[in-house]
Image (cartoon, rainbow, N blue to C red; front, side, top):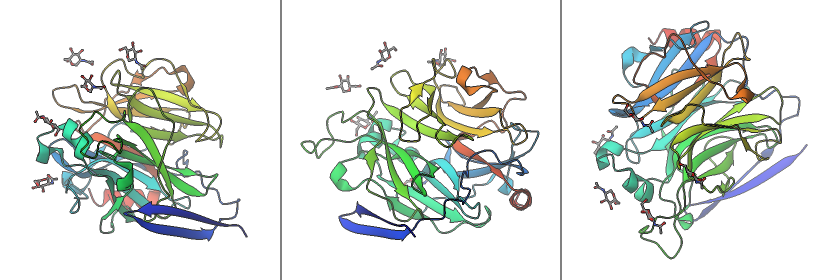
Length: 342
Ligand SMILES: *[C@@H]1O[C@H](CO)[C@@H](O)[C@H](O)[C@H]1NC(C)=O
Ligand SMILES: *[C@@H]1O[C@H](CO)[C@@H](O)[C@H](O)[C@H]1NC(C)=O
Ligand SMILES: *[C@@H]1O[C@H](CO)[C@@H](O)[C@H](O)[C@H]1NC(C)=O
Ligand SMILES: *[C@@H]1O[C@H](CO)[C@@H](O)[C@H](O)[C@H]1NC(C)=O
Ligand SMILES: *[C@@H]1O[C@H](CO)[C@@H](O)[C@H](O)[C@H]1NC(C)=O
């Protein structure tokens, strides 16, 4: 039996997490296509209401989503800033537990001043968990960037099961400030992708910068493939304010290569991706057109990600005002429970 221990420092308190490694035959490629799934579940937020909304779509109707809960939010933050944006949903390797993680940011409370949000924002994530996608736990506010790192914000979390560690790797974007600037008065670092590992979304390992970049990066989301060491990621390059696709064939923490030009020629953010359940060679990509008069997601698809050619989906994505979120395939049992919540 293998044992592992990780230690993390939060709020100046050391937290040690120990456990046993699962046997290697546990099939844990949770985010890869699921042929037996009955539909899709999306979680998003709205500019006008920084809360989490749920939407479902049936197999065969990959871009026609219907609101659940009568269009009312399914989750409202009650801690931190009491605003939640950029929700991401993640499944346990055994498909019996789900977590929603989101940015702790209430932009309406600060007049949409994103400079202020980057310098003096929350360094915590909102986290909820569920075993059926309908009943959600009380929210946890988890500080992932300790004060010693002088982060100005923690934005747009995403997570992927890291089979090499048998834990979820959680990613987010932070700007950090030097020790010489405790008031965060300088521009600070570029926004960079940071990560941490967790087994239970309660205890997180000490955060690290993923790979430092010469441009600001936010809104990263990862797509797994049938090859254990091959991954795609979609992220927003803040120098050009466009969304790029990148690929690694050497593992999550391997070498990432940009696949040519931006996936959409225009100002976009908040990429969210999923595979067609019946035709897993087709990948859908939602990008948030925040430059539009009414900001919201547009859907594109590609039958060959390596070609980096993305076509507008038809029919176009509904409902129209969904913003930065995530989509997962769900089983027949979970899908019918979500349908009952329509
Ligand atoms: C945002 O902040 C305002 C002002 O503090 C508060 O009234 C509101 O409940 C918060 N949450 C949302 C989702 O607007
Ligand atoms: C936005 O916030 C920054 C940092 O707090 C401040 O310097 C700036 O004046 C604010 N901008 C507006 C338009 O209020
Ligand atoms: C800080 O940011 C401002 C606004 O983007 C820019 O004009 C200025 O050159 C930056 N300063 C430094 C030292 O990079
Ligand atoms: C930023 O984008 C401009 C084009 O808009 C490009 O010329 C420049 O090389 C980019 N900077 C970096 C560091 O990639
Ligand atoms: C933003 O939207 C305006 C109006 O539709 C358009 O003219 C402009 O090209 C867009 N800018 C970018 C960078 O996409």
